[in-house]
Image 1: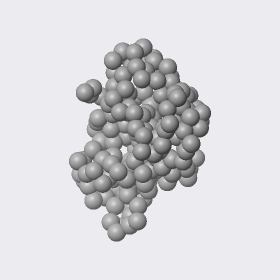
Image 2 (image 1 turned 30 degrees about the vertical axis):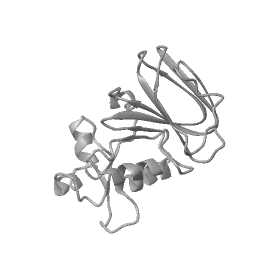
Image 3 (image 1 turned 90 degrees about the horizontal axis):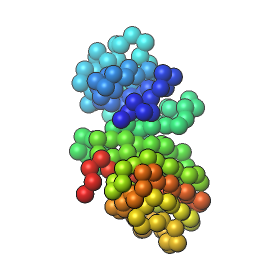
Image 4 (image 1 turned 45 degrees about the vertical axis):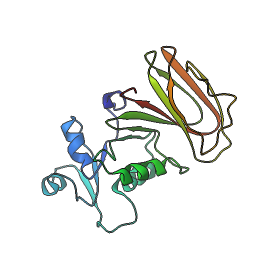
Length: 195
C-alpha cells in the first residue's frame, strides 16, 4: 500500500521504531528522529552509514511523530504521508496524531494497518473504490464546512456540519468517489475492513 506514495525521489524519514518498520518494508530512511526508546536496536540503527540521526531526550514536549513531521515540513517536503503511528495499541499516540490534523500545517495522508486517511482542505478528493466500500468523514480544523460529494450512498452536501458531526460508515455506490471541500477541512477515512 505504501508503494503507491513512495517514488524514487521520495524523502523517507522515520520516528523511533518506525525505522524498523521502514527497513522491514524495504525502505531505507534518510533521517531517524526520536528518543530511541522503542527501536529494536538503537545502537545499530544510529550507526548506520549515511543515516542522519536526531536524538531527543525521553522527557520532551512533543511525540516522536510530531518531531519528525516538524523536521519534514521545515525542510519543505510536500505532500506528506504519515505511515504507521499509533499501531502499537496506544490510543494516546493515535489521539496525538489526530490532533496534528487540527493544526494549520498537518499531514496530507495517514496510513496505518487499519485504514487510509486523507486530509482535504479547500480541494477536491477523488478516489477509486469498489462499490460497497466503507467511507467515513470527520470535520477537523476551523469551520464553516461546505462539502459536496458524488459516488456515496449518503451525499455530504446540504448537511449542517460542525465539529460534533461525523459521517461514519457511508458506502461507495460507484467505482470512484469525489468529495469537494469548498470551505473547512475534512478527514476522509477508508477502513481496510468493512463493518
